[in-house]
Length: 435
Image 1 (cartoon, rainbow, N blue to C red):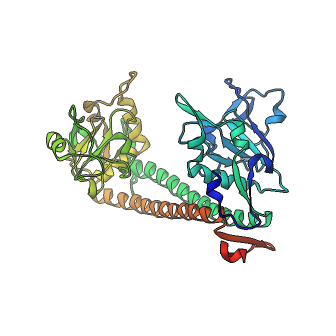
Image 2: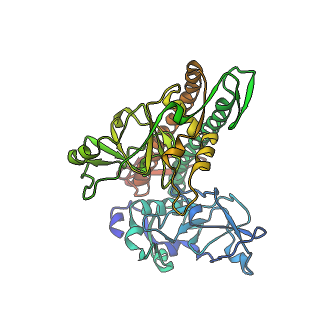
Image 3: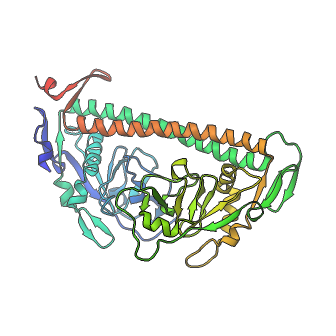
């Protein structure tokens, strides 16, 4: 690992992590739960972006020596046990929830403030994780991997003077704040979209009279029809025996459930078929006028495909709603993804050890159908929100890419940042700053 830091600037030193910290301590194991206990952060609470994720937390009984395991503001949490791909992900605790402790799958790292900035430790550990260092040095077991306390102690990180550490941390922290604010805008837009979907798909636009239906109240002028009344439902196709995906890409993408999300298909990990395989199963394709729905595995993922995927083959674990009449495909997709649509899908799914949504049950799903012009108006509202979300997601992606590039340059000293006064920086390349 020391080869990564062969050309450090003058006054920068390569040091063992243990030599610049006051405390490196793993947490405690607890298989018990206690609603009156204390929150214990676990591996799922450490995200890959350096933040603490509190979406799913649990409480455990308070041990007698709890003082040894309480988290303080600024503590760095290193994930010492996980899958080989995720081992070593690191976050910083910023008093998100108090009091709070952590499990034995995490290691708490507290730096010596006379030698190192806590966020300097954070960014360096994230950088090492992104470079695959922990993937290479971890001890591998069945289903998981681990990093020992000794390995953590012996990690080498570059240590510039504190004034430079603070400058670099401030630059990266500014980008982090931009990412956080952008993420907050995305979250608010998605929350607005969820609220509008719930309202517009049950109350419509400009209606004053409503009627009761088996799926709830809806405008009096709307129709309520089953999918079987307005469309055909057809299943996908398993790859023929002996046939495999081709290396790279071809003219024939094959859409699996893993490629689906609610609304559209992710293009990043698509598999492709040879001409020979396609000719055998070419009847099982999906077009842009169709709506897909997953029927096994993760059930109820619904959406439409992009123009680039028109004519793609569809997995046997999904179905297509095709030859759609009286309703726009995109409107149907929005409805199936709404709470009302998902509630119906869940109620129709077979309750077995391996649940599956049968095609005949999809045909029973009831759909509210406004007149075409109202469908278009509602779709325009949804589309504008989607465009806003996509714009913000693109900005967030660019910020994350910017941060990655800055981390490579700043943490290696190829770009020097010096803190002067209150937030004033001088930025130059490594050669310039060394002169």
